[in-house]
Length: 220
Ligand SMILES: Nc1nc2c(ncn2[C@@H]2O[C@H](COP(=O)(O)OP(=O)(O)OP(=O)(O)O)[C@@H](O)[C@H]2O)c(=O)[nH]1
Ligand SMILES: [Mg+2]
Image (tube, rainbow, N blue to C red):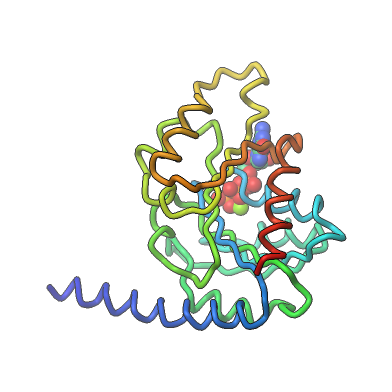
């Protein structure tokens, strides 16, 4: 009983900051996307390539969440985009108060789109509203095609599914991944989910994803 009450209190506090964040972002007409995946699916690589492909079209800032290090923020800064690193020191997801603090450090007036790269984890970040406009789930082909079935919540809650590392499917590597099955399973959970098979390495599929972002950023 006590456990339930404590959990509820944490969620209430998180939701309060999430509401502040979404109000700030909507007042300033900024799109904010919360990117969630297992460790190593390619989130930072996708962000760096997306920033480069959209240079001159959309101004992007990134909030990086990791348990330790500022390696990912450094990779984003190498593209010339602003990045704020959050270290959770063990926690498996970002919280809305951390995003509130990071937003105050980003040059938000100069940006069109703010990406949050959540801590690599397909489960914990799912239930924590950060005040984002939408969640983007990334699944790489090396992780297996059973993931929508096994981790349904994040696929049900996301606006976009990026299926990354599709270059591996034609590279001669021995990978069992049925793209059509993943699309069908994801759509069974979420009728309106947008699905983009991409390779952040070769650039395959990136144009469709970037066009979706341009459209979404101009709609806010
Ligand atoms: N073949 C291939 N490798 C990729 C692709 N995208 C990323 N990688 C590689 O996958 C590894 C992990 O990529 P990251 O971008 O660091 O993944 P991440 O999801 O940000 O990882 P965490 O932040 O630790 O959760 C790196 O070695 C990348 O070079 C891709 O499209 N194809
Ligand atoms: Mg990363």
